[in-house]
Amino acid sequence: MSGRAQLMWDEAVTGYDFGPDHPMDPVRLELTRKLVGALGLDRELAVVGAKPAGDSTLRLVHREDYVEAVKAASADPAAADQGYGLGTTDDPAFPGMHEVSSVIAGLSVGAAEAVWRGDALHAVNFAGGLHHAMPGGASGFCIYNDASLAIARLLELGAERVAYVDVDVHHGDGVQAAFWEDPRVLTISLHEHPRTLFPQTGWPEETGAGAGEGSAVNVALPAGTGDAGWLRAFHAVVPELIADFRPDVLVTQHGADTHFEDPLAHLAVSLDAQRAVQVACHELAHEYAGGKWVALGGGGYAVVEVVPRSWAHLVGIAAGREVAPETVIPESWRAEVFARTRQLAPMRMSDGRWPVSWREWEAGYDPADRLDQAVLATRRAVFPLRGLLA
Image 1 (tube, rainbow, N blue to C red):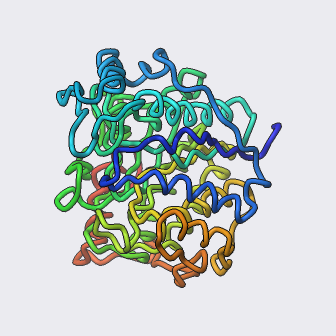
Image 2 (cartoon, one colour):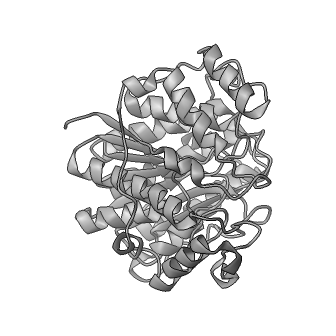
């Protein structure tokens, strides 16, 4: 093992820019990278780039006609084909869209390759996690599905079992779709209930098909779920499934839009609970996947207050130097935030809720509680298919 962890980074990712009025502001990536530097975390790991994903790599997941449509829209945004989800309100076409999307995809594929080959035990691409893109179309701010491409590359390299855990507030529909019938990939998504949030999928009854039946897992959380409920649901479902599946590699997606300040969703999770789940994923990778962990970013639209802090915690965990919640954020970064956004930056790496706590599922459940109903629905739908007790 030549290095314990890698941070995948290329300044070009800040060109993933749908325009000034779009919620996915690339400043969130720039500010995260600068906070990682201000905290000294980049001294604890290797910061590396990767080749942009080429056509053969993109075709591991995406249809050739879709890749060609992205290229055409990238060259002439006014001619974007909305039949492929391009040039829409969610996914406006912009010059160079194919090129920068390929860079992001390449970083996630590079992370997967580094972990599989032993160049790093952990690899983080917080610019990735674009989990809504489908084989034949853009969706939900996502052009190429880098998470699916990383998983597909791991399978191509010889991985027999890959587990994917997605804690973005939105359902990881594109990754689920890519591996819907593939028993080698276990996809687990915890998200706000599809009744109240895009993409209106991710019901507990969605469990895979064919040989992959029981390989898709969905926990649909009630709007308003906070720290205790979110962590209770995670720990009631994810560890038992990962322990049973025993993946060769764990791939996780850490969208920061579960936060109570996120403007596009309705969960009430704190930064401290997000950090707790990041720690739990790291522990699961070591306990069941030989430490092999690929960690990705995702959604997150409180681009100053939440996203940089959440993903800086993720980088610190992967680097083996966890950032203490009470850490005071360097004034240099806060000044940079104000200069770039005219917003006041947070003072500490915490929302003041650390340590977070939750009630273990094994202690019993309340059939009248909405959160417990959601967990029960998932366990009853999937666990028996995997030979586990619901």
